[in-house]
Amino acid sequence: MSKPLTAHRSRFVDEYLTDLNATQAYIRAGYKARGNAAETAAARLFRNGQVQEAIQERMQRRSERTEIDSDFVLHGIAKNIKRCEQATPMVRMPVRLASSRIIRRGFGIATSPGGLLSRK
Image 1 (tube, one colour):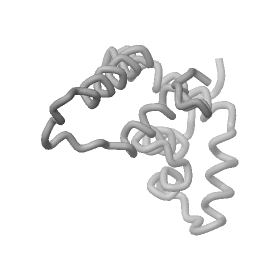
Image 2 (tube, helix red, strand yellow; image 1 turned 45 degrees about the horizontal axis):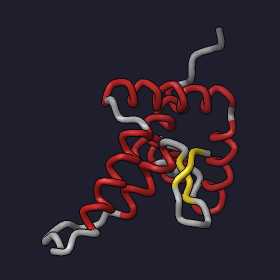
Image 3 (cartoon, rainbow, N blue to C red; image 1 turned 45 degrees about the vertical axis):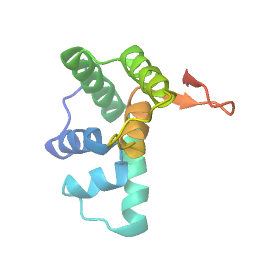
Image 4 (cartoon, rainbow, N blue to C red; image 1 turned 30 degrees about the horizontal axis):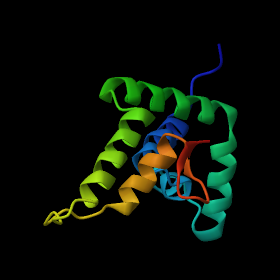
């Protein structure tokens, strides 16, 4: 069994899971680097084996807790596409591309050149 994460690293993992942005998570976790130094340090911390293990574990727990997995997301996307193809357009249904991009990244889903979704 490996050593537990330090408080700073644990906070980094928590912050990373809010928006999947390592640089911003690094800054919000209380580390002092700014600008390019923050990007470099965040990338190094993100590659740390313990941090990666903690991120994967917490993502898995969240997926189990919320009962949302990649199949759920893909079915929702397909349902929305069918809805968009209706003859009468739906009113007041904003598209949240940034949110869907975060969800896809969180579940390891990529868009192929043909526009199809696939797991990484």
